[in-house]
Image (cartoon, rainbow, N blue to C red; front, side):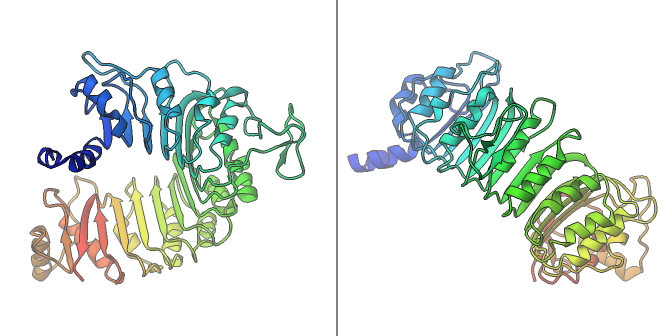
Length: 438
């Protein structure tokens, strides 16, 4: 790069902007501050919470990432809130903005976001959003924002997501609360992806943002057991009729809760479903099967594998004929038989178009001997599997990771199980990936 800079003035100006395209700290903290300031006008991506305190002269950023400040050992310079605000206000062309609030948290200042007319991806965390300031902030970016992530927003009230500019309301999208009569709901018309953390008391009012996104296609929520699932389901059903992907990040979701949320999505509309379930029953299985004609990506983490969970899972695998990606993680060992034996049973898999399969499971307790006893030919096959590497294929598959030990007995069962899946290209079993040569 240095040689290219010295060729000519044209090459110098061209390669200088490439050399200083991305600024990341603390990775670049050893660069002298005066050098950073001199070349900061070339920055296009800015990600920092420590290393240099500024000032910065960058005005053409496309990505601005301001993470939560962490106090690292040794002498460190940290960005002040004033410097962060100057960066946001001086870069109206930024398209990706991630901004964590200071400690202690302070109220949003909507004026910081007033010039952001082309921003498409926004992540806001650790702020106070009371008094309608969050709604005003989001409305300023509503003309371009397509992806929104909110977490740890303090001070929200039940009527937080009403249009801050609406006084009298109208007939469309009106909301009536105990303290507010017939106000129009805030509308974020371009948001297609929404991620919000709803855990813990004080943050659950964020759920009101879901009903503000009429064109929402992907929703990721992190609720707890006290969240108002009825309201979320109602907002999805009434306001998010284009929903295609639903992810619920909760460690112990009851089947009935999952069924309530999945059933609120437009029938035959989900393309992706990602949930962690305490158990699965026939009702939930049938609810998932209602989306079988469109469902292509299914990610299930099961905390139980007893009947009816195993039966419900097999119903889903036999009925979702359009699946292309399947992630299945089973955190427990069933009391009788192995998980693989259940998966190889009836009803047989109907997802014959599967291209990617990830299976994370224990096949047997560590202190038990393998229950697969075969003849000499089978034992030779197992030895061949043990020697698999990038150069050696076995049964059409080759292992992508050479350093990870694996259970050859269980692997043989897995390979036998996926033989009918003729379009399968990638198989991951217990975090080891195998790729097909076929």
